[in-house]
Image (cartoon, rainbow, N blue to C red; front, side, top):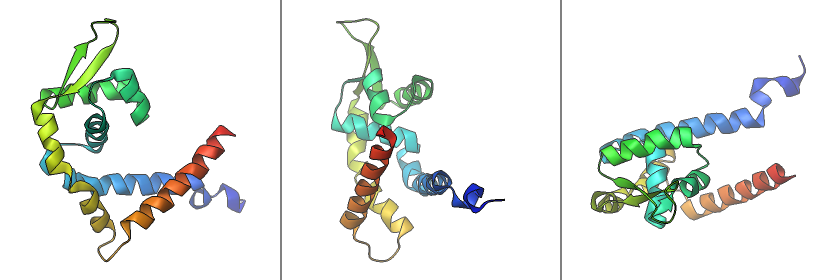
Length: 146
């Protein structure tokens, strides 16, 4: 078997494993907030810009409506969001934070640092790490476009 066809040599597999492990690290941090990882990233987007349509939310999160709809139902059941049909176009559903959803933001402020320290228990330059990941993201975006 050629070396380039081994699973361990696949770039995509390495990213897949890293992604799964990071998401696994989020679980004990997010459990006290009552959020899953996808619930957390949904709330992050809404804390930045409340009142997005499901379509816009889907684009921000790179999630299809089949994944997003049950997630939004769960967040609504927990009292964190509401889904309301647009007055301008009934086909459009807009997602709004509730008071509880807005208040959860304060409790979630510790999540990013808690995640980094769970992965890197010693001193780590979080800004340098973010810059490195952003540079890598730019490279990947360029590759996808070509």
